[in-house]
Image 1 (tube, rainbow, N blue to C red):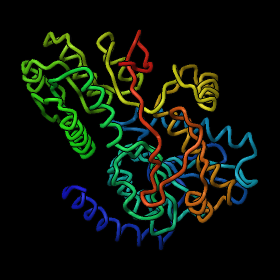
Image 2 (image 1 turned 135 degrees about the vertical axis):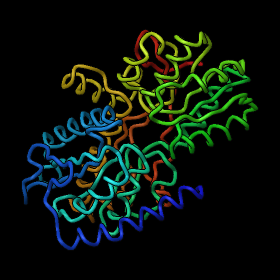
Image 3 (image 1 turned 120 degrees about the vertical axis):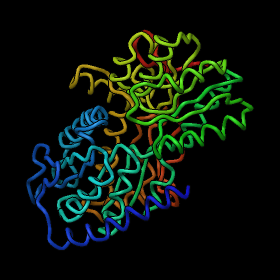
Image 4 (image 1 turned 90 degrees about the vertical axis):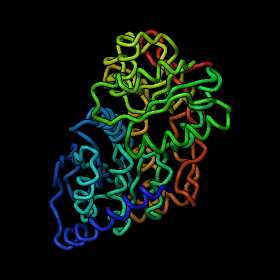
Length: 394
């Protein structure tokens, strides 16, 4: 864990100490800051709920939209199959914009709501981690299905994540780059995740003997990346790598192709319609890491998910939709394996060995009880071909 991450977590805990104590004592309404309920989620007695921290608005709203599609579909299927322990399963959504301050503010509302048996989200690991101490104190499972930071689950034994770790993603990314190039330029987003991801990538590149001839970070709200991409191009790399999100990945490749005349291979972007729309023709050939391919999955459960998703939304799901979908399926499976309570969810995560899996080729997974992560889910590589993400073959 970096010194910066330790300091950040200490600061968050100090903020939460007062916030959580006050809100837990006074109690809160069901919806609270940015909250809205899905279907029968506000009913009492016959309904239990999963709380959702997600970015409905703000700079990460596209990911919130994708998460909600996967979550809503999963809840519909769970209830059509009988619910959890004879109860209806609901979702209580809270729009946090994936901002740590808002997550810290919302957390006590969820922790003091007796109908909430588990919480999922948020999009970014720092935002999720701001809420985790409150859930830990309340004995409420925090299921960070998108939180790839290896340090995310260190808050306590009620914090879990089935997400593939950033270290695993960047190892696969660097290995793929090594097969493509001897010299590379790397640009990465300047936030906690981006800096951590780049360090993992850099370490693996060094092991592979790949030379990073140029490296630079950029601010998340950058609109002109020419100042860092000109030297990235002029370093004469065999490959340019971007470690970031979809919108900034599109900005990188559009600048390289349209303004700077770079025609070489590119690793970067994200598996979203937003990236494909923003990058347009420049997205063709872009390589990214992922956990799932609707176009190429051989997992029967995943194939059924793709079919159901298409029927409901009219398009194929991607990595963000499937991980959200799986989160609800996992927690419903946990509730039915034990009981639909906070204690039951925690017990199941500690004991169940066959949680449903829709990523990769395996059909089930279990948690490492020391790290509370799912260590055996391997990343895959995807490439844009004819405007779609398909499995990459180097």
